[in-house]
Figure 1 (tube, rainbow, N blue to C red):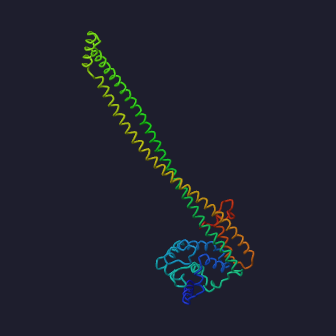
Figure 2 (cartoon, one colour):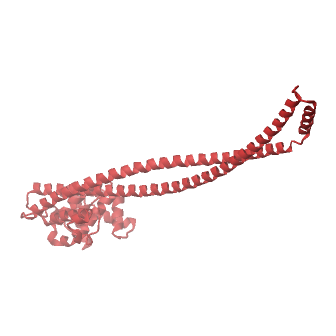
Figure 3 (cartoon, helix red, strand yellow):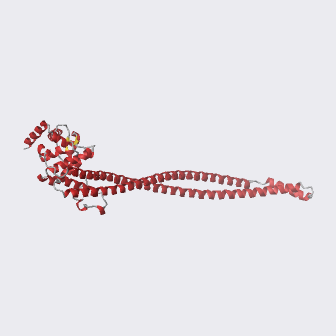
Length: 376
């Protein structure tokens, strides 16, 4: 009964089972493999995928990740909540005390598995772990650990690359918007320049008209004065010149004043258009400076993206080589008598997990990917 089991656990905790405590100090992966090895023929073959999931959840909750071995009370609460085991705080603490066989206030994976599947502590410690050379097992496990680490690095690299791609796409969109803005500014400047050209033509025409009138007026006066001052000229010619000079000086200079007003108006118009063009040009230059800065930023990001891509590709090649080496070592161990089934399953499951991230044409276990949920 549950009560008997609770009593058993408390008795074992009181005895201070040092061997089981040592098992709790192993990493989550090694704790899981120990239980799978020891109880493979007692239902753990069917529970292997669940044990894998429990292990991944422990690693997710533990800040030490793969190097962790036990969860604190808060993390353990979170773990139990993920299993939809709704409990009050008091109930959960009671459950944790039942699980925590060494009474250290933490929950190791192997403590949870022993509690969940109701294995004895002593039988867990003494459960069969295979008879194959342990050094060979350790070698294979080290290779798979390298694959797992490489896989995590690969996933992180791909995520960083995808982020860089998204940022680059955003930068490109922003640049396109800036380009459109610049084009509008250029169009506005061109229109302003056309207006300025028209104003300049009008001013030049007014100036030419004024100069022609001034030249004609001044020339007529000069001619009359020259005749009047020329002693060789007859009295008749001098008298005529005097009359013409008097008439010229008595004329209303309105045409000349009108020309001056036309010139001044045209000049003000030109100055106004010049100011408009200057403002438009200044705005365009600001936009151009902004564009150039964004282009430089985009190019830098593009370079980073290319570097990340190259690193990811190099990592991918390294991962493939490690997987091939680990797979070969596992096949060698599978052929040897005494290799524990739980260990073999775990290494194959690790390989399947890593296989999901390989290019489709290099995947060995594509047919199993849907069966196993990605947990890396």
